[in-house]
Picture (cartoon, rainbow, N blue to C red):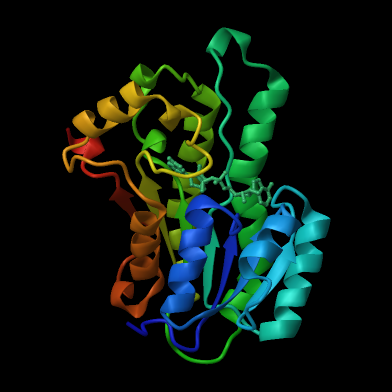
Length: 253
Ligand code: NAD
């Protein structure tokens, strides 16, 4: 479909995995976009040839690089209709061995990053032409709601950082409502991306995931992207502050 014809989007972490699939889906729905990522080489090899994409190298934890990046976005597009806060990292490790540095690093990217990016994007989201709704979509995780300790990968800092992003989503939904900005989350279950490639190398892990998932398969980045496209579109014009679980039924089973 062409649900996002004429819209301008920005996607963080767009060079890989879920972010790449989200960017490609928004483009397929008719949007033009700013693809934001730390990794300039990956960004350019994925989107460098497209004239409907502005490649922006920026670190979501670094205010100066975001300020510069969003100045370029403003110059190129003038306004923003959709922001997808997708960039995120996971670190594994037992609680007893967790260093303050690791905790802070995960929070910097997964929680503070979406705050900094949203704050930078907000003037562009609230000042544009047209009366269609504007949308922020945050990529949280089922791990903002539940703890998958049986995966053998304890990660309390990841759980906590995604929980913070969940409540940022809800608080900003209330804040943004008066300015026509909807704010929602997509909470993916286990998705096959470079992020999870190492874990998915073990056949027994794959078998366990498939068996544990009511819909009986491992999620793909396109599953996440389809959920984001809905929340970003006018079809979701009365939806804000909510979470769409894209997890094959994991959290209800
Ligand atoms: P990925 O590692 O494949 O891609 C992440 C991208 O973000 C990379 O291109 C990386 O360069 C970029 N990035 C990392 N730190 C950055 C920073 N500081 N500034 C700018 N860009 C940065 O990961 P993925 O699996 O596609 O995950 C994307 C999002 O989905 C993350 O927020 C992750 O927590 C979430 N998620 C993933 C899964 C999963 O199973 N893969 C499940 C739930 C949630």
